Length: 432
Image 1 (cartoon, one colour):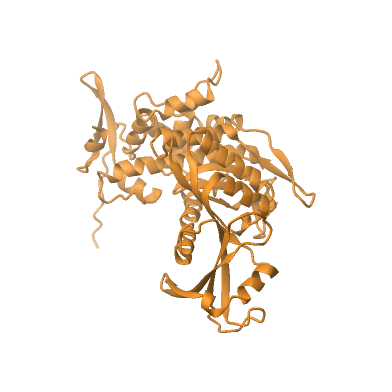
Image 2 (cartoon, one colour; image 1 turned 60 degrees about the vertical axis):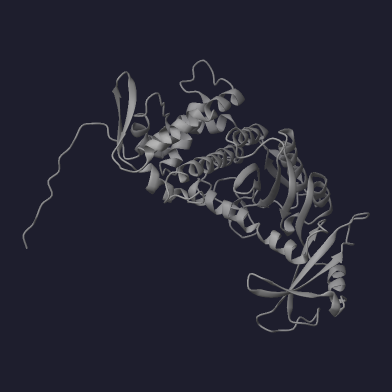
């Protein structure tokens, strides 16, 4: 068979395969993000070659270009990023020094059982994150938002990793979200009990919102938040709350003693449940709360010896007496969207590859990459208004393939810089 060779012609012009990153760079400056970062973090020092905003911008551009770690800038991306006029891309060493310089000392928290755990609380970075969300219009002063909180295991094998309840090693940070936006991150040892210090963590998260003129409308949390001090904190800062309740003997007795007429049948996601409401009487006095109980038939059809039927019962504690049982359950089940945020952070925005050896340094990285993810939400919504094949819910990989990866080059013409893109797609509408 005849070999039809491919002729290769090389050109010396500086053509970048990531032409779309120039739009991210433009929006970083145009939105006021650079000015906000420098105003909040101050001047780095007389001998510093880069400002805080220039280093942050390099981190942002790293992830928007498909990089996974700081070294990718040094090895693969720096030449491309520096083709953008007036864009200073710093080295990977400078990026990591910045992370370490913004760290705070760990705090020792003693549990009710006398065990000591390390927590890391970084108010400055969390405050910067909230202000960036306000700056980009993703949150508004005076707004009342639905607030979700959960603890997420971040698996790693650094020297300060502790064994988690899933028997791997890592950290166990508490993360507060509003929709698809991360608003607060507080790191903790991987072996820390989920309830230890959580009331104080939530107090700081709610207070940060209120400091910036916002409140929690409804709060959702899993059974890790089901304790007296945590419930009191949540109730004090939220108009309504929904917390998965742990079953105890008194609650199980109440469920078992409910007369048949107290139960109703509802259908949720094509599954039939029986539901009922009980007054909450476990460990709080003078409260007007209810327990919403849902019973689902056991697929194995095996009778429960305690309840005397073949149902699996789940309970939700709430102060919402206006909604039906079905509405309470459906609203609580929507908290799965906040768990999707953890998957996105782990796989798209670096939480699965921590760069430092110390918890306090990695806390800065967690909040920084949360800021990048929040800024991605801002960018992708703008782009999705012009590019029909990109949705506001598109994952980062799809966005990079369909928007960032476009060949282009910068050239100086008519006393101004012009970006030439080798495409017929509507980039010009975004840059206008």
